[in-house]
Image (tube, rainbow, N blue to C red; front, side, top):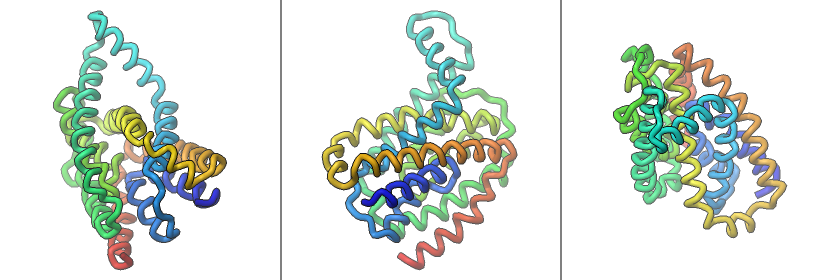
Length: 262
């Protein structure tokens, strides 16, 4: 894989990771057009790590607060009830995501472009749910039930073509969270999921070095970080306004065209 291809894939990852259009699905389609084959999944995960750094930067205040609350919780000191509920929700969501995600990965869905194309259509339908069902005006705080619901949604988001951000934000709103809180929670629970995926794919490190050099890898990750930061800021603005369904008008034609081409 050339330096240009790595930067292009990083750009694509950054712009689609946060916007609810499925970054993994776009990477599958892009590889079909660019005829890039046999790239270890670790490359994808490292691009995800770049966008994880974006999440950590944008939500740094909330993340630091939750970390402090977690240590207070394990040392049996008093913790704000909202932070305690959020911590339990993250733990439950991470467990559910791991079980479902590993199950989905065992079927290697990324090897089937027509499946990815069909799932673009599914994501387009999912994004309309909050609009049709008037979700997003709730005042609940995250808890165990939220963790179960959103964790299951995030696990299904492992399917290329299903937007992780789109399905988790939608599920968070369906669980009774406000739009703003749904956006923050959906991205904070992605942190342990991405770190877990990185650990599981470190075995591909040697094979990755044989397919892409260090400048290409650095270029791809930098591209993903810069574009990802811009995309996340845009997405949060759209979430607050309840306009995620606009992306359905992009995903449905994309899915239909991809079905025709593949």
